[in-house]
Image 1 (cartoon, one colour):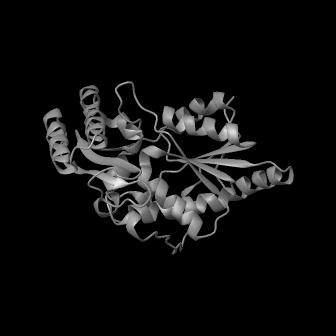
Image 2 (image 1 turned 60 degrees about the vertical axis):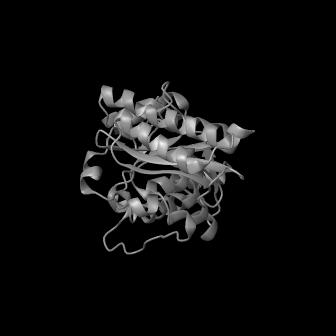
Length: 286
């Protein structure tokens, strides 16, 4: 049985108020739809941790840099509802655009500092402002106790965690492990836009990352490892490799060696589709 789909904030708040009166905890899984196994794993984690679970589906225009990317983003609401049906979530919130950005909307949430100044920040100007703004609104609209995000978007996870902390929003942000294809490719809604051939080639991204991470953890210097990985990705058919960085897990400071908890984060284009991934490096050295 599919969960009810609500589109108006007043209806959402009526339902959450009912749950609050019953003393129930609320879990939130914010998504832009085109759900895959990674999203479903977040809903499962929320279901285990909370009495009630809301999955939101909203394709947020403020976090797209290019109009064509917004236009091409997959919209599969009914399929998404069917995928969630067996998980027993309590409702799906698909807000009408005016419920998020009503006429005259003029407020922007911006997270500054080092976590937005690198990687996705320079390559996608304004992206994190769009993410922080919509996520802040969803946190407040749902009044959730816990919110579940995938670690595939690691920098985004850091941004929303910092935003909630800085704005004193009483919610616990929980990062969940990345779910992967059998090939190792991180699951993403964007994978739906890849041809079968490009999807197979894209598996080279995680392979190159794991190879570089293992060698870095073993003590090899980072600069030649990065250069070698970039070349292997180019040979595999990737176009622009925007970044392939070894960084501190807590601050995103660039590192030469994984001397403290570290992550390898990458973004690269395959067949016109931008793919991102990250893995924990220090765990490979433990």
